[in-house]
Image (cartoon, rainbow, N blue to C red; front, side):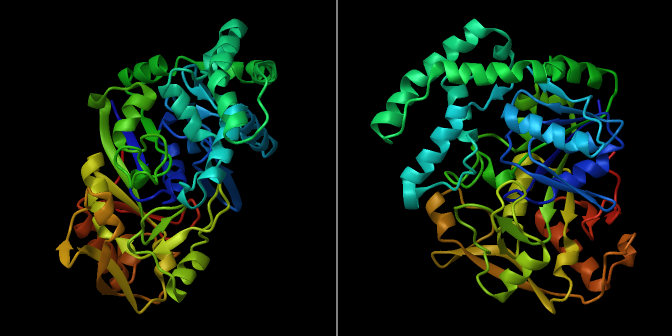
Length: 427
């Protein structure tokens, strides 16, 4: 049962799309198991760049079946737009499967998300405003709309009415917004039903049968470990579980079937949105990382906050996910620095702390303790093996591996599909 989980080991945007795409030719299924169209991936194939927001990266691999699992929240309009865009570029999307138990992002979820963020002002979370959080809240409150509900107008209408009973009170009396009409929402959602019907399936059954038949299944997480609703830097987190455990609940596959958990690490650290970030840079180095690394959110379009590599959060990711391997991305971005600082621990109230503090207050006050590693100036984008890397680049990788607690099995030395060094096979 070769089931692999691939997830972000930092705050997201680590390059999971490239890693998934590289494995796509060797796996039978690629499964998104949480999040929604707030988690973008950029995949470069030859001279073509693909920006994926909701669809699994495996959709670009011809022999692979892409799956949107039950733990994902789906905006039908975004889904159809993304499928249309890929079809126009000659990508075959006919094999896509969508869980009938996945929840639907409704128009009122988007509205609530946007007005709530504006209302919070300085206390805002930094959401993408795409309705993801409110949709997960509806799911927990048991007033959510599932994909399968689009095929029973009576049930759909009842559920929309139940959700809007409260939401319209909040919109009109608290936010001074116009009430949302039930029939308009129902009509819009029913309009998507037939268009996505060919893709809807019992994905839990299909994936478990595939694993029983020794098919290779790759579970692809959105965002990253430090954005996990339970294990991230709460409250500045997403509304789902990008960590490895989320793959089990978000796809309906038991933990005993997971054989390998791969964490994606950027060779430095970035973050989008609000929240603590101990190694964040506000100087020329931070701007250089942003510029050279092209650090702008695929989905949000926002500039990413940039900082040096943080080994403390890497160790934390190893622990909470049970990581077996790391895929280190964007090593080429660091070319040109004489010295590269790496955060090896924090100083909190005058004390050295080497593990992520569980206290939100302590983490907000954490100051990075750096160790400087020698840099390199040689172009590494043409490197095909680990030995092709400059000695200082090799030493940097080995130092990060030792500090992070799991072997680095692949290294990204450029944005292209073929600009990757495979140290150990993932399969």
